[in-house]
Image 1 (cartoon, helix red, strand yellow):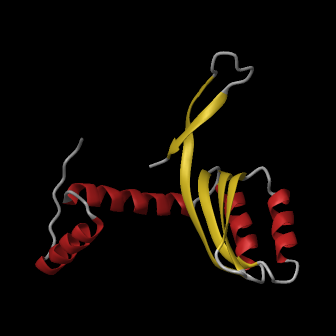
Image 2: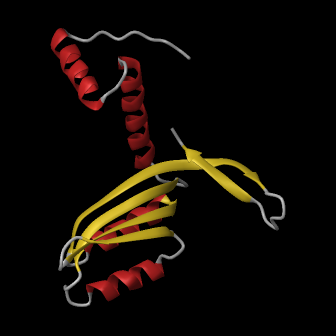
Length: 154
């Protein structure tokens, strides 16, 4: 592990220490590592060529909205190659929360999320995207084909 030193003015250091305490970090080093990871991930996602990801898309929608359920189902089927799983929760008599786990090229995942969130009747859409890279490929006993494990890119 490499070490480096930074200097902060008193007010910034106090604000940072409050932020660390609010989030439950054990020390400044772990907080700084998480901030670096987040910023590196943000930078990596600005240049999406070849970037693979896993993602969670969550949104709330009114299931009484005219044909919205059918439109969402068609979108999901049209992008079935990205979808790993969907969880559907009824919030009240009108609103549903869906969370969709996605995997694939970041450009395609973002485009799908944008389509879903732009539908009339969809509210509070949010995409949490994490860049991944192939870790290693292997077979299990009895498998006919190999599969690739993914790891977070940062």
